[in-house]
Length: 347
Ligand code: SF4
Image (cartoon, rainbow, N blue to C red; front, side):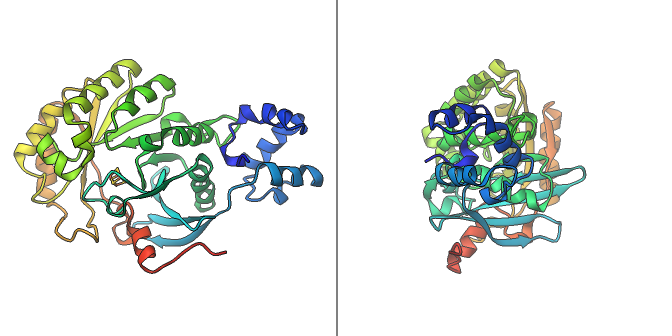
């Protein structure tokens, strides 16, 4: 059984034909799903009732619901989205002038084990199917028109490559939600085989890489993925990606007080990033994480020192703010809180 939110617009006609269903209805189906944004087939009143019954049976719409919303004083909203099997993921909505960005999840938990991350502290339960990734977008639309998506929530997108890519292609499709590819950013912790696969797609999604440390010794401590794909391999894959796609890679560097925040680290970071011809850096002060009280937010002066070192190396650098600190907005924290409170999907 195929879920409606996992079918790409161009697949509807052949799939309907294959099942002996009325293929000429494909455009009306797409209209109902992605212009009227129905949540159940019964709302598709432009379609005949008997056909709606067929659709319910053959292509159910994913049963997902918002279990919890936590809102931060800066307007960031964090939603806990529950699925039929009782699992849940987080998606975060971040308002800014002229933008409404959604951070979406690709897995329940995460196997990558980054030590500063609440999702990583729980391990991975399962990967999401494409329709469950799309469901996060569909539910979030009720809170406002989404202008940008960052695939930076729970999970490693390149560890769930096929389903993530299907979901993003659907959200990007002209006859789907039609969100521009350049408004969609995929973020990886450095799963190297994903770079060549993404380059071969020929789609203009943005790519960002969570670096968070400037050398192998420190990165392997903070991000176990570095033991599998060390920095040399990672930076080579990044350089090959920018060469093949002519697209910039953004390196994310979360500054953690007393851990990766020395001037030496800043200088090493500049040297590493310069190995990639088209690269920029986002510097982010760590949001406090409940499972690691020893990890602290750096001082403003440290952030400015990093900025200065990178700019002097002629690296395009942005200082980012941590958003939604009082909304459990560091990845995985809302789910962690709710698991602790035993909140599950309503039946
Ligand atoms: S930071 Fe990302 S890749 Fe690392 S454990 Fe958390 S969700 Fe996984």
